[in-house]
Image (cartoon, rainbow, N blue to C red; front, side, top):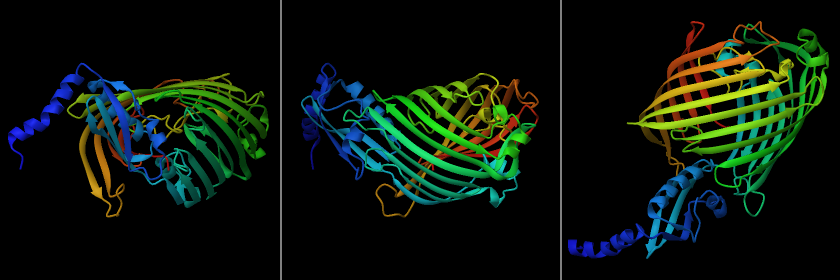
Length: 456
C-alpha cells in the first residue's frame, strides 16, 4: 500500500505539467477510438474540433471535449459518447473517444395513421381504413460512413413505393455529399379543401397519383454549417371530380400537372442535442422555386430559429421562431398548407388547419427537469443494456399569424393566434420525444394532446 509521501511523489509530475500547461499549449498526440464496430474512424474524427498535431491550451481542450461529445451525439449514430484524456507525456496528450453504437438496421413492419396527428385520427373515428401498413427497411449507417438507405413498401390508405439513399461524405475531404430518391404513391381519399378550419376529404374513383424524383448536393465546410442544393420533379394526376369540387385545387382547372422544383437551404446548429436542445442556438434559411407554369409557379422564402438557455437549478428556456412567405399570393389550394402540417403548428390548435401564403410562429417554453433514470433492458449488449429517460415539466405560450387573401372564409386566417398550456416531455434514446400538452386556445377550448417526435 502506498504511503501519503509516495502519492505526493507520483502526483508531482502531473502537477508540474498542469502548471506548465497554464502558460504553454498541449500538443495532441494519438486519438484512440473504441466501441465503433461499424462506423469508420474518420467519420468520427470528422466531428472533432481538433486533430492530431494541434496545439491547444488546457481550458480550450476541456471545452473541445464537450463540443466533440455533442457533435458525435448529434450524428445520431451513437447512444453514448465519452471523450476524455487518455494519457500525457510532457506536453503531449493522447485522447480517448469511447462510443456506444446504435442499431442501424431496421427491417420493420410499418403501421401508422395517415392523419397529420393523433387528434385528427380520433376525429375520423380511429378508422383502420385510415392506416398505412407495410414494410419499411432503413439502414442508418449503410457503409459505416453515416450514409442512409431507405426502402418503403406501403399499402393501406396510401399505396406507396419509396427509395432514398443519402451519402453525406462522398469526397476525400469529407465536405461534399449527395442524396437521391424517388417515390410513387396513390390515394383514393383526398383532402380537397379546408372549410371552417377543418380538412375536408372525399373519396374518388381514381384518387390522386404522385410521382417524384429528386437529387441533392450537400456541402459542409466545417462542423456546424450545412448547405443543401436540391432539384426535383413531381407529376400529379388528380381525379377530375376533385377539380369540380374545388376549382381552386389547381389554378387553371387542370388535373394533370408537372412541377419542377429547385431549392437552396443553409443551416447552422450550435446545439447540445438537436432533437431536444437545452443550450445553444440553431438556424435555417431556405429559398425554393416550385413550378414554371401559371398553375403551379411559386417562390417560397422561409426561416427557422431555435434558442435554448439553461436558467440554473435545472430550469431551461426555449424559444422557437419560424416564418415563411410565398409569391405570388394567388396560389392554388395544394400550395397553401401552413399551420397544422409538419412542425408548423400551435399547441392548443391541434384540431385545426390554417392555410395561407405567409406565416409567422413563435413558441416560448419554460422547462424544469424533474427526474432522470435508466431502465435495464435485460439484453446482453454493451450498447443497449439500458434505456435512459429524462422527464421535464413545462409551461408554454405560442403566437402565430397566417396570411390568406384567397380563402378568407376560414376564421383563423388573417388574425393573431395565441395559445398556452402546461405539459410533460419524456425524452429517451433514439431521439424519441413524447410530449403531453394540456393546452388552451383563444376560442375558449382546452384539451390534452399527445405529440410524438422521432424519425422512424
